[in-house]
Image 1 (cartoon, each protein chain N blue to C red):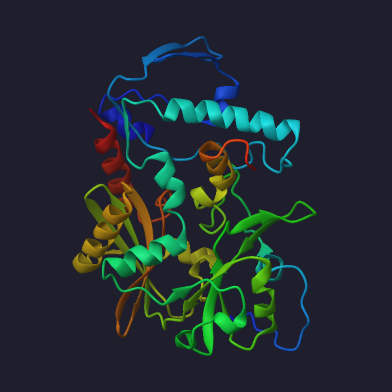
Image 2 (tube, rainbow over the protein chains, first blue to last red):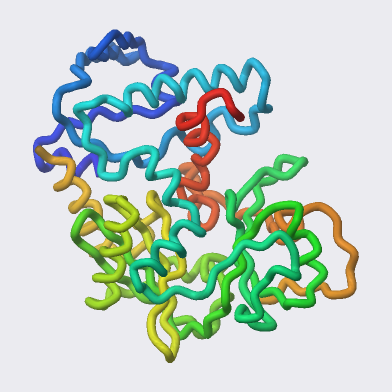
Length: 293
Length: 56
């Protein structure tokens, strides 16, 4: 991304919560002053027109595992509040604004938006117990986390919660009252698609489903097995959905069955660099173009 | 892949029951597999704090 911006003679200001910690700064009224450890000084008027893109708030391990209510939690909160104040600068237009980045990541919100827009999507519910699960989900359905899909176990090992198949009579469903999960009708996938949208452009890559686990992400090799493909109608749906959700970037998962294509879910800051080089480059370039004055 | 265990009495939550160790990370610290790295998931705590400071 930096190279793409550099080629357009754009000099970006890159900030996250971690880098702020090692930066000398002053925020006063509508002015931000920064001085890096290397002595590079920068002054920015926060009402001045600019464009911004939020890739991540902080590195994955930044102040991770801090216990709520502690001094360390307060310190972390202070750094993110400072970043939030800068991100709220009235002059900055964000590819996806901060609040939407968070709110639109919600799979229930996405499913409701797809339904509202008439975009095919599998039946999706969250229910507090087995008796409230609609019959229409079938005897077997997919269960996936509504909250974060990863966490650290008590022994500090990073855990991932994959999408998995579950039967309606499974004892696992006795645990539904403990934490809300997404329950989604099962689709017989012929192909998996990843559709990436940037503003009004979209790109699609496909992955044949044969031989892959239900959640293709469990297969490391699958990440390198996508191929570019033109899917005009699906891309139009993907762009309508992104527009409906008010997000300038999205990384969407779709499944193609013998009955057609279905939107599964999206990530408003999802990955694209694992896709084939020509697609990854095109996405990067499109973000750089959007950011360029 | 099925998560069915119809005869068991289970404890914890679906999180603990369905979780598996995350895939290994690359030398540069980035997780290769897309599951553990979709960024908003990872940044959820920070985002929540930014939107609702002091409530966590």
